[in-house]
Each structure stands twice: as structure tokens, then as C-alpha cells.
Image (cartoon, rainbow, N blue to C red; front, side, top):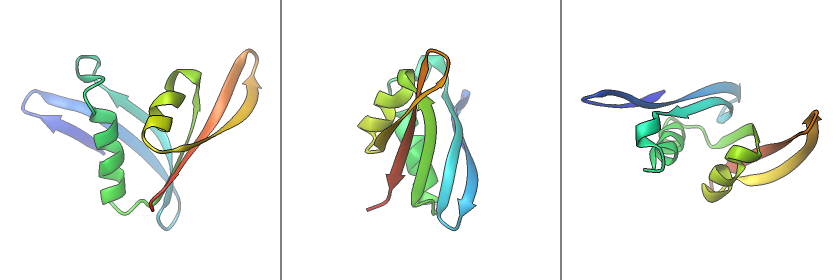
Length: 94
């Protein structure tokens, strides 16, 4: 799924269905010129509007604050790769 305007693609989110209503976010990207303008939140809202009520993502320290700010619960997965802590981010629609 993606967001576009007259200039083209602004951002996209990829989901892997796990069960009805539950999906894993496999990737999310926003055009560099539109970052920090709410596009990531809009992509998450787009996923929720499509009926996904339980979303999860595995990420690194660079993106974990974004997910936390969006209401995801954060769990450390430890150092899954040498020198790199990974996190499980999970959101369930209230």
C-alpha cells in the first residue's frame, strides 16, 4: 500500500498477513523530502483502515522511537546480530 500525490509516490508499507486481522510490517519507506511530516503515521492508519487490527514489526534502534511514538508496545529481542539490538514492535487496535 502506498501514499501518492500529484508529484508521485510519497511512501509505502508492506504487510505480510499472519492471520485474519493480523499482519507483520515487512517494510515501510517514506520519500526523504517528506519525512517527519506524518507520512509514516498515515501509512499505519491506511493499514488499520484496511482492517489490520494487530500489526507487528521487527526493527532496530534507529526506528524503534517512531513505533513507540505511534503507540506500539516495544520488546527488546536482544542482540540478534553481532552488535545490533533488535526490537519487536506491536500494535493492537483498542
